[in-house]
Every structure is written in C-alpha cells, then in structure tokens.
Length: 504
Image (cartoon, rainbow, N blue to C red; front, side, top):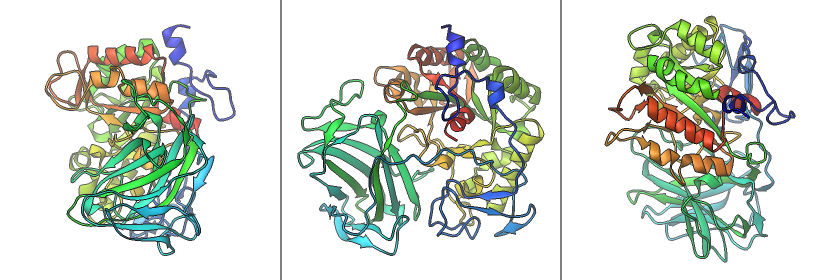
C-alpha cells in the first residue's frame, strides 16, 4: 500500500471494521446548533459559582436544557453548544471502589491519620478512603497485597482520586507488583509544579489512566529494557497508591477507585498520533502542509480568530484550503489575541466565556466545523473570580487540550477537557523544550506509542526553513524527520476530531 493511501485510512465509527476508509472531508461534518448547557468533563463535586451543574449530578452525562439567551450565574447559554460527541466511558474489567469492607491497608511513615470509610467526601457509592499525610515528604499509601493474580496485557489502570489542597503536594505514584511489593513496576504519574497548569488541582475529583507506555521504573526481579518495555505484564498480586507531600505541610487525599480497563491495542495496535499546531502561524500553511500532504497526514490547528489574515498569520482562505482540500481540522485557541496573550486564568469567568462564545461563533460562521479547543498557554486553572476554566470550556467545546505531558493521552481520554500533549518539540540546539531525538529515538515517545497502542498528541507552533531559534520552532526538515519516523512505525495519524468521533 502506498504511503499516502495507508495514512488516508481512518478508523470507522464504533461497530465498523477498523481500517474502513473514510473521506477526511466527510468526517468534518457540520455540528448542529443547540441550547444545551453541558458539564462534560467537569469534576463531580466541584461548583463554579453555580455555573454548571449541582455537585450531585454526574459529570459525564449531566446537562441542563435552557432556552437560548437565559443565564446561569450571569453567563448566557451558548448559541453553539457541544453536540455531545464525547467518548464512551470504558467499562472496567476489574474494579475496587473502596466501599464498606474493602479490606485495603492505609499506612507508610508519611501517614498522619486516615479513615478507611469516609462517608463525607466521595463521588461513587457511599464512601471513599481518606488519608492525611504527615508533612515529612515520606510515602503515604493505600495498598492491597495478595490479590488474585492479574493479567495487565491489553489493560490500563484507571485511578479516581481527590486532593483537598495541593499546596503541599509533591508527587503521586502507583505501584503494581507481587511478593508483597518486593517486585514492582511504578508509574510516577503526577509531579506538582509551583506554577503552570497542573493536571491535579485542589478539591477536584481527578481521573488518570496509566498505560504501559508510561511505566517509569522497575524493582526486584522486574525489569524495563532500553526501550522501556516491561519484562512481564501478568501475575500481579499487589497494588499501591502512594502520595508524597513536599515536607512543608500535610496533604489530605481521598481515593475512590482503582480499576483495570481495556486499552486499545486491539483497535490501534500501533497507536495513534495527532499532530497539532497552535496559534495560526502562516508557516503551518507554507512549510508544514507541503511535507504532510504527500503522506496523507492531516493536522489539527488551534486558531486565534482575530489574528487571521494579519502579520505572520495565515488567511481565512488558507484555513479553508487546509480544511477542504487537505482534510485538516480548524479548531479553536482563542477569539481575541489579547485574551490569548493574557491566558484565561488571568481573566474573569465572564471574559473567558465571552471569548469562547465569540470564538465558537466565528468558527461556525466561517464554515469551520471543529468543536475542539486548546487553552492559551495550556492554562485551565481557575479564573480570577474562582471559576475553573475547563468548566467554562465545556459549555462551548467537546474537548480542550492542555500542554500537560506527564503521561501519554489514552483512548478514551480520562478527562476530555484536560487532553495531554507533548509540546516544545524542536530540532535546535540549546533552546530548551523537547528535543526531536527524544521523541523519535529508541525508547522515545513514538516507540512507546507504537508499542502500547495509545494516543500521542504532539503540540507544535512555528515551522521555520532554517535552524530553530526557540523551543516553539521546528525546522521543515525536522518536521519531515518526525513524519518519516511516524510513517516508519506505521502509526496512524488522525486529527483530534477524527480520534474523538471514533469513540463517540
């Protein structure tokens, strides 16, 4: 099969045969109008000044049907609301939800107090496990050893948890092993940053998927080879959820669920890559498109509406050509360039909502059918008046992409309004970011994606003809190298919209 033909093959909707050929333009269907206010992706139990839904409602399915023009918390219902093309919840093949009689141990010299049956804070059933750390930087854990042996081939781990206040959170680690945890694999799935957008935020129920692509370390008789491949994937009898504070103060956390869910190696045995570009740079049209078109590889561009046709940004005609002639996705990044420059976390909820509304109306009004979005600077924290930015984004778009990259994204995404992406990819020297070699080299992100069947979202910005001078630039030759390495591994390339439609 030719190179361009192979990458033009997109997976069909659920129930259809994988590999069924779908025209890229036909996949970009017009999204209908609606007066639906959704809470898709919002964390259960979190209120945004009555912005969305009551804390008792299901985060995955709750919606309020209101007449267009009415408001909640002072915000008008969107004219163009998401059509609900969100991924199905993946059913667990094994689940521990920490209800009464769960029998798991709470311990570690980093634990100060605990309640194995907390009936005050929970998001499933009638209780969860609550633990407060000792403020000494030592491990605190909830664990179980001696379980029936589990096979994690073709599986990923799903965690549901909540940190009351992240001020003193250092890191979160999950251990899978045997022999009383003498032999383990570990996933260090969150390291808390003092600044920037953290996947784990105060008082929110968070869902994380752990895949074999993200396993970080091994101990005892278990090993990881140079490519990061585990020596075994079966026979596990022990599980541990561990929390470390920063030694400056305690952390209180609740653990609601540890589950095993099917991964997608049976559907995408070599994974999926989405190549995304932020900010509408003209170089995407002039330099990226010429090397992507011959391979039949489409991109997703997150656009700043009022920058279109000005300065170094491409024109609306070029946007339409990318979408209509090459099957690219024209998604949203912000309406006002000033809002993008400031970042949403430095605006009020009303200002963010207005910018998102104007952006969605501009996209639809100009014939761009994507209902996917990327946060300016990746910032989805709270607005200046205390409303979570991702909850506002859920009013207008079906997904929102961050630049968090602690773990690779999964099918289906654990939290569609916090899609993870690897950014700063460049082939320069001494300019920071993520070196191209780290992505394409042995054991790098492409190898891990191809081996584990997951979803690697890449975030690029400018493409330059010569040598990159900043971490937001990649040379045209470097982009070509990246595409060749994706092609060499036979990884499918899908737009974000195509990927999400597959699991809708």
